[in-house]
Amino acid sequence: MELNWRSPAPDVTLSSDRWRIRIAVLNLVRNALVATERGSVTAECLADEDGVTIVVRDTGVGIAPDEQRRILEPHPRSGAGVGILTVLRFATDLGGTVALHSEPGRGSEFRVTLSLVLPPPALARDAPIRTSRSG
Image (cartoon, rainbow, N blue to C red; front, side):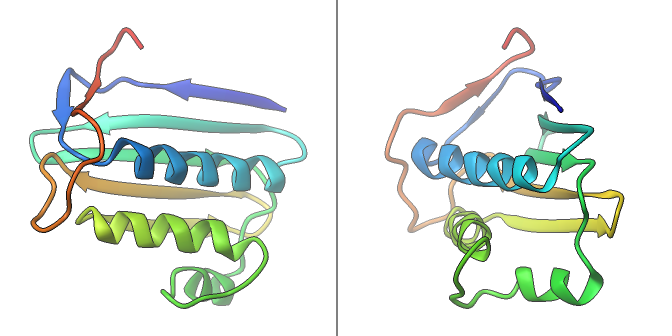
């Protein structure tokens, strides 16, 4: 299996909670690695004038349509769903969204989209996050 990180985003400053974003990305990548026996997992950061989108894509087992709806519901559950619940909670707290596209047997793609500025009353724990093409 192959793990890829791409950051084609132009230089932007995202005023957000570095810890929550880090945990969300780790949860998405960990879930993708578990679901992918062969193939690849790719994480990337995209940016435009409105915000930043973190994309985690895998070529794993995929998720059935009825399960996709359940995964994105904001209620407590156990097992693998806890990582996604954390991603949903953090994205919502930071004024963002989570989208999922998946096909059974073909893999999954999660997109976490965040505004460049935290909405009130969310508070950043760290300094602004800087993304750049160099790394």
